[in-house]
Image (cartoon, one colour):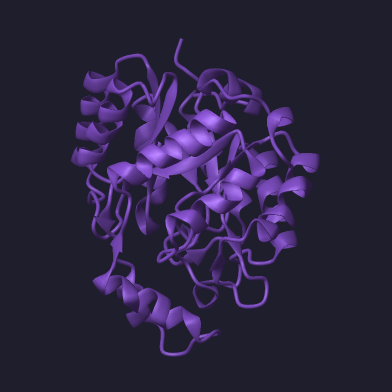
Length: 309
């Protein structure tokens, strides 16, 4: 019997800016409400960043996260996954701060350094809601998203070993899978582990179906039955790539971090709209959707009662 598909929803992220969509959640209450609604729509895992409630700029301080984490936990049973990618330009200490304070069941972990280009988005707007937005986007023309072997080892030890947190290992290119294999060989990653394959970010693997199929084939060869895999794709590729992943037996990630749209030319009014759409597609393919408890069991998570919020 085919595995049930685990749906992750990335609620706000650290890439899109308030000018791009009026529906991007910014305040703690908006982030909490969007997370709970996404869970109710079918997401088992909620991937979270924090933002300054006044300007929408990505922030790292644990206090910002603690304004919405307890609310989410009280109102739904979803697995809470805290980003260690943070906002582009943050130090690793800043990126780790909230996760170390919250000790979540899951956290994201970027598996390699890369050029991370979102500067083309700055050309699409002539007016901005906040002064920081244009500069934030344009600086990525000369920016390296740092995730060295030392950085990754530190996260695995300080968050994984010390807190029992497991990871959504974000792989933007083929080499990142081999980085996972390196840490698996060293015993710093232990099965079952969760790989998020990412397509369509400038600087990473392009959103071509051949790339998805090749990365999944390589991951199967490297990891066998020891891992779960999921797919996200940026922008207009979101739904088609998630559909392809589900058909290939994988899991999926949607959310306003990855795409602001529900369909061509149609802004998504909520994260739950995207979750409901991919759930409908998956179930129309006769694939069942996993519950949070089923996701916890498959990913070997410690349980929501073992967190610090």
